[in-house]
Length: 467
Ligand code: TRP
Ligand code: ZN
Image (cartoon, rainbow, N blue to C red; front, side, top):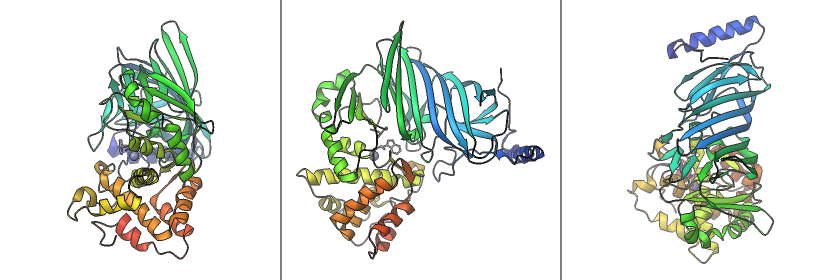
């Protein structure tokens, strides 16, 4: 049995220790160092970890809404991107019972959200290794810098896990940063009579005595902030789109009647989005509708977004558009958030334009008419929120969408659709940042000058003086 051992002395000693580890390791001919506590995100510097990339999470969980007790085993397959003497996982709250790396007991230590693991044997750059973490406890609800709640949320009859931007660490240990995507197998055992809905496809549902285990599989890469689990009573509807894509919709029984009509639009919305954005990137789609107040917002959880109560068509279009913009093409850091929200908002503008509402240009004009001194809209540029608490504020959404309309004005409709579809193809199941986006637009429209758009609309402070 391994016990928690303090691997690292406190902060001031960390440098000295990492030096010591390096020197010790060098004696054995391996130049390993600890991977480090973060991925240098400009807004969440401790989110994610250095030195490795995860390819797969196997999560086996059991939860009882009565006691709010979670037990979990996470089997994490990762590849070392440097020689490693130690590496971190993100985990907030919960008690760690045991950690093994490549089947051998590992030493570990916790400080804040960092679970630092020192494997029995050093890991070589390029090596694929498996880490198993056993843990349990009452998972926490996390309050974000902007005051919104994520992590593990209690609902009337169960629980809801939401992870944007840093909530997955409340229910499983991992590399909690959008730049590290992986496939997932999520198994959750609950008291018989409750349902569990997660990402991907349901592979099995097995009742043994008074407990039922649900096995969900996500083959396509997923960022940790898009992983979800809901536990409770749900009315499940399965269907398919006209191209045979499975649609799995789970609705809280109190919301079924009022949400029927809007949820019936999912196949039509997906087909319209495929026409505009390119092939749907995942093996299934759907939605999860909870009670109003179960969460304070909707979230584009992969395959099936979560809604607090009955969605309207625009928010359904928005969260499903994120499956292309955010879930398949994922921001490299939280600074690139406008690549999610600007596109998903622009999808609403386009939907309205194509369905007898305002044109996107008219919506743009409506926002442009916002007075110069209104800082809600003009307070900061979409590609540079002034801090972590601003990443989901209106400039990211509406000014982000305005950038796309400026590009459309510059290149015309045909080239514009080539760009927004080509972008989802170029980075399908990957990650991208703002510089890659502007370079892509320039490459797709040779001879056009975007410098004013980037300077004034994307990165510039205040209301641009040209419409
Ligand atoms: N991404 C959600 C949407 O589609 C909004 C959201 C919820 C959000 N929680 C967040 C955005 C945390 C940034 C950070 O509208
Ligand atoms: Zn959004």
